[in-house]
Image (cartoon, rainbow, N blue to C red; front, side):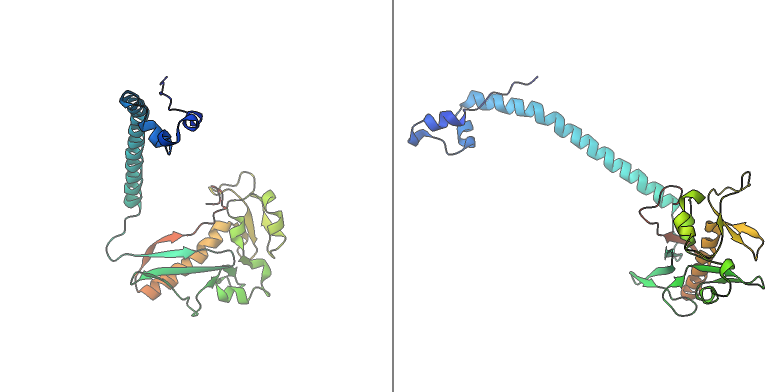
Amino acid sequence: ALLVPSTPSVSSFASAAPYSRPRNARAAWLDTGASDRVAHALCLSAVCLPICTALRQRRRHCIKHRSLIAAAASSKASVAPGEKVVGVDLGTTNSAVAALEAGKATIIPSSDGSRTTPSVVAYTKNGELLVGQIAKRQATVNPSNTFYSVKRFIGRLREEVDEEVAEVSYSVISQAEGEKDSIEGVRIECPQLERRVTPEEVSAQVLRKLSSDASKYLQAEVKKAVITVPAYFNDSQR
């Protein structure tokens, strides 16, 4: 334990004569004499030096840790000169894609000229795949094969999405027991394809559409993207 010499109390200041009363605690500390000041300095050094040393070591550790993370990130997400990288906002209702042009983010228009693309995927009676606005337009005549708001089902179990299922026109079921699939979670019945699809598969069609629009706009193949993730998503949803 460190014993720090005490300074004169305030009551002792009040009892002193007016002409000798120090104006503040610092003046009182200076009046305690050279030996007391040296003792104070030694005690403060004994307390502060280990703390400062520990803080410096922690700071060096944090800097080293951040540099390692940055190095790992740069090695995984290296971008070649001239390579195009886009940012994607994969939304529940609408999605958008943007790219940097002259240092500024620019929204890339879809094939029909709009700034956003409806997050809707449909399969027609002829087996044609429709994505975006064209899929949204035929939703009323093809409700069981038109999939929207599938982002709400990604990474979730059937018992967790009862309220969301009541708001869609297609059938959402549980994963069949023993079903050989690496993706766990709900399945969507697609009568036209005569099979079940995953929400991830439907969302992938939206991403392909956005990537295609971006490639045409940038006149370059797009292979890398940064996709937004809602803050409330858990690990399985991410």
